[in-house]
Length: 569
Image 1 (tube, rainbow, N blue to C red):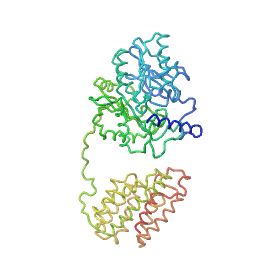
Image 2 (cartoon, rainbow, N blue to C red):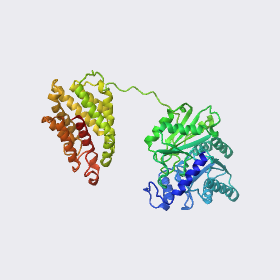
Image 3 (cartoon, rainbow, N blue to C red):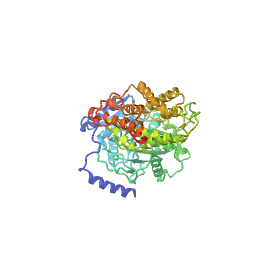
Image 4 (tube, rainbow, N blue to C red):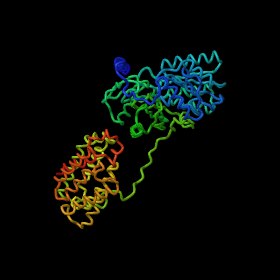
């Protein structure tokens, strides 16, 4: 089934080639022809004890400059585009040399042979090959020439950890082989012993990936917006299966069930597994941590004895995807995985743990010591205002996207949702206590500068109402609103005319003070929003935006304030 699906996907991909440009053609490069050479040079500049052969452009070999040929050498390689694999894993405790081809293309026979001759000493060399036709042919023929032409001892192993198709490609699980074989070689093992360790890892490793996108820097996007592909190749080969887009926890299930259902993981694992959590190149670190957390909350967590990552280890340029690799552990393999290495790109293999959270400090609960009270008029106004902000979430986010960071609606809706949840616990009949509670709630739950400024405003209102000595909203509310806004302006440094929410709040406050009521405040706020369209920003995120972007666009914060008054009027 997987093979047939892959064949169909491949046919559609071939049909699209030549008619569509890369989905993300903008790249930080100089010249297309020099990408790989300049990538290698950049790695050398920033990595201690790393050098290369002076054989550009056809032969691209990096090697340890601190290597003395007194042990078993380890060489791996393949096409570029998988960084930090392979050159990023050259160093004490892992690879001795790495050979790079062009992007997604196998290195040549001469390139592999050059690496072998450069680093192989009396104890011999082990070539770690990923299971692709070009890699197998070029590395194998280079090994033969090294034996016959140079009299060197060379052995080979081929990684085949991908369970997505019957082709059993070598993907991220290859890194387990690099680490274990590297540690064994560092420990002084013979070539035969190092090869046996590598073979043991290969037999006990399985990998599977899921991606939401193709390799967008090289190809058109072939995955539908609402879909994800399971089992994409690391060269952008189409996935073996297409599924509906799913949350992180479900993606973990799809991958783990796919790995464990295969023959490679059929044997028992009394010592548990090591898991490698790999970023295929385009997933933000935030989402990788979330994905790792979902894995550790899954039903398989108790069997995961060691975790490597999450990190970009074996990438496919900018593919928006993840992969997991499982290694069935033995005490010996665990020792090699946790052995020290100088390679910066290799994350330390750690035993996953989650210490019990420590109790938070006291006194931060905004409802602590508060007695709920009812006021139907206040309750209705709160409900109308909050529901209006929740309904306007997308509109405000889109507006903020033009002049800011596209989160104004999300921030306002989040705060409004929390206030609605707490509405029945609020002291609605006590204006001072009500404003104090709102200040604490917003300070705790509403992110960004708007959250703290709104918190300051309500705290200023609470202070004003305290001085009013119990006067109702009708007598003290407008004055308190003005005092709250003054506290906000004192703290934030902005004022009316700065192109901020103040340009709707201040006119509304004046209208209330002049007896215009909520209808007058609504109209004044709306006029204030309109004025921001051509108002040069002197505060807020719009201050850093070119005039061509903000001109004619209302300020999102002011728009949010106007929405509140429109709902309450």
